[in-house]
Image (cartoon, rainbow, N blue to C red; front, side, top):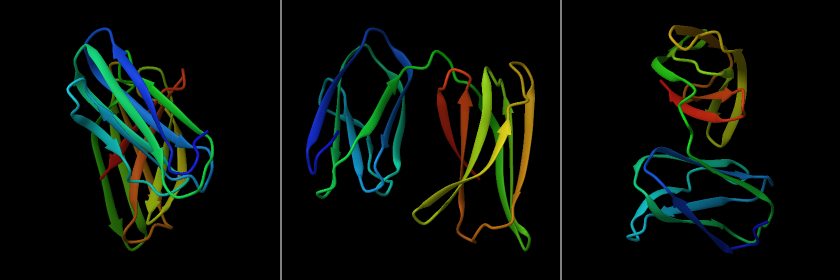
Length: 183
């Protein structure tokens, strides 16, 4: 639970080098506007998240971290308070690699296409349309690629506005999530 303009500090120790570290800060209240900053042992800010509006999830993926102590600060804006879920993880491996993605706009909507490789334990993909301050799931796809083969996916979004952006969330069978911007 975070209150008003309160800031919480979390200490993270990596006992070995990390190819990748994922930070996800999910607001559990629609009015809670969260932010975070991640610092290394020398006091350098390595990542920060303050892009999303109130009620949304802030994310960052860091690569090439060395063994050592790190500090993560979580804060909120204005007088709103509420619960949040903080997840920090070093994934053992990526669930999927995107080899290609495209968004093509036309008179009938936006055609979204992506190709994946190495779908390791992918349960499904969720496709989100992002317009202004709205993030809406528009489709869900069962993963059909494999560890050593490509998966090809297509979707026609007939309700997209001209400024719509898209995010793809790959969800592993163990609940891990990876988010990719498309186009």
